[in-house]
Image 1: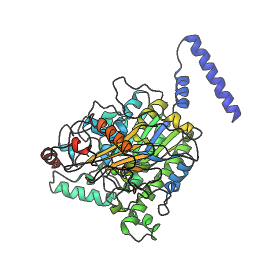
Image 2 (image 1 turned 30 degrees about the horizontal axis):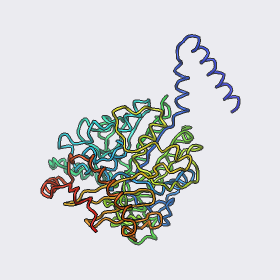
Image 3 (image 1 turned 135 degrees about the vertical axis):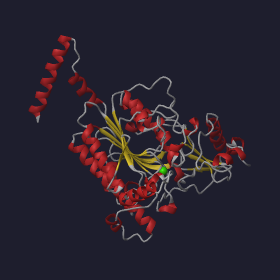
Image 4 (image 1 turned 90 degrees about the vertical axis):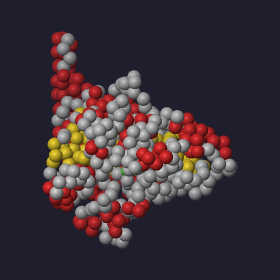
Length: 492
Ligand code: CA
């Protein structure tokens, strides 16, 4: 081993010497330098997974050994927020590094939206994948896209070298079922087949799949790592599972692991999470086998809170997917990178999915384009030093409903929430994580400060470019949304 490293050093010295003599910069030296100083980056995103639904956040029902091991050998974030309490806008926020409301993407793209021209996250918003690709990363997305199914807005148009998965907002899990249904409907001449049944695609070519979807995505992630590890570039992989999002569909063998859970939805959901964890375990094995593990940052998070009516559990957080209580947009998250991310730590200060873009670009030693607007910040040094990266700063969430809006604001130990058209409430979230005791009467100035912060933020919003369902467009107009005057009024 020692001999080998000496030989390598000697080889590099000779190459360097030759390079300096000839004035030609050797590709092999350059490659070696890049590989060792810039990490591979993997985002593992699950869909609608509840805050409590991982072992590392205390679940006694979920079985997630692979995730738990990574979490415990890395840093667990207990106050991580996504930019929106449901899928599409949350993902738009993650990949653009901006709140989706600021570029008209505050609703999901409607299902089967490839039929409507012009629908996709505006091209003016540069994705983190483009930024990393330009700086020399090999980039891939495996799984759910949901950010534009129209030509010009697909993964290959947004900085991804490789895509395997589906363009819409979700997918069925059993190919023996969905492939058959898709073919039947196609033969029957249905021009508007439900997108959850559509064939998967690899780089624009339809693939007829045979494996349970979560397993298939995991296996493709392993293939991606095996392939990427042979390249003279670091890689970025966005592994976007659609589990445990509905439809609740799990393998029988996985269901049997949870025969103690009597609620069928909960049992199925647990089995779906288990399948994700199995895949994460296989991914780790592949990273180790290809000698990439030590130089790979893995970030795991859910795209929004869980649906408690579909098997999820967000405890101790109040609220569910779609609302602006904590349970809607505070998600399970960890960072893992051997000897770089502090091991065995809990980072309890608030952070946002918005922070991943600038943090990754920093680690990639890339330069953010001058015209690129970002709402988050590079939190790397704060994570390493266990310091509050966002002291005094506010993190927002806003969800528009038919005639009113829900808003959530987090600042230090405070949380201000306006939900289901009720009045603003203030909680000390450090001592009252379940948002039970409104203290706005005791700290009116704190609430005013946070509502004013959200109001100022809303001045940057633009009109939605699309609605989901599309019929909401008329409601938006008729009800004179977004009604910010009403939204930011504090009733006495
Ligand atoms: Ca989701």
